[in-house]
Amino acid sequence: MNPLAGLSPMPGYGSEQRRVPKVDWLLVIATVFLISIGMMSLYSEGYTHDNGANFKKQLLNTAIGLLPFSVFAFTPPIIWRRAVNFIYGLNIVTLLAVFVVGAHKKGAERWIQAGPIQFQPSEMAKILTVLTLAAFYANRQHLMQKPSTFWLGLLHISVPFALILSQPHLGAAMVILVSWIAISLVAGVPAKNFAFFGVALVLVVGVLGFSGKLLHGYQVERLLGMTSHESKGKSYQTDQAEIAFAVGGVTGVGFLHGERKAGHFVPEQHDDFIFTVMGEEGGLIGCTLVLAAYGFFFYRLWLVMLQATDPYYKMIVAGLFAALSFHTFVNIAMVLHILPVVGLWLPFISYGGTAMWMCMSSVALALNIRKRERPLLF
Picture: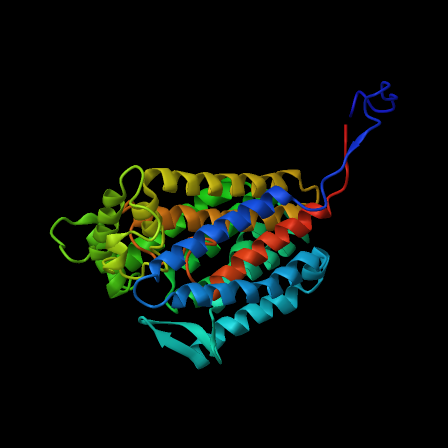
């Protein structure tokens, strides 16, 4: 019971409303800044060897990304909740389609070729799973304390998780799992349920690990390259990344002047290892600036989640926050040789069409939710 209920507000207090801005311009600015850094890095990466092909393609990817951005920015989120069954089915169908019409590339089947455009269903599955899982929990708000809700939520993500893991794409599957944990906690699922899940997960991983069915050969090599001093050559990519950061030092060698980059010493530098371009040419100062930009971006995203009054909205932003922050942390950690290479791109900066569309769609959803918040009373 509120002891202040029924009391009239004091003059000058409680009678004013603080309206949430219709557009969170600070979140927009942070996003544009990160995309700009990515474009500069891709331009520099292709400056000496491919006439900026990846840079030009990424410009096109970003322009195309304005379409899904507009869809998620202007469609009322309640529409996604009402269409949850269709969205879930679409998610599963596109993930299954990879095994039927998917393009085989780099030892995996993750892409669907549509003319000149490559579409990666596992990337959009991250945002579609967030939408459907948030809707599932929103429809069971009165049952959040029941263990069945926890296990049904896990079952909800198990199908897309298994399909993505089978491609194989361990990194994307981990993102789905992390988003599920974040959304579940924000939804009000008792934390104790995760203890039982954790024990079961350890047992399953242990059994599959000993049987050799958990990791593929290249994943084992990456892990060995991370942990073993005798596996010389298995960590070539991260070894070269470390050298690039060492060459950059504190101030960097300057934009377009990276010799390690020009020599193509770091494989896939335009993709998962794009941060090494900033490390060599921007040095510690440049990398710190980029990390600060990410920090500000996630702070604004966290504010959207914190100030959301609708549980469905709050869960959506929590899932997006978890997915993008996990991507950022793991990518930078693997580039710095702190974690094994798991194939997770750096949000807004790494090259990739579907990845950019997923990031832009996430921001659009957050902006959409932000502008629909009710006025806050003081």
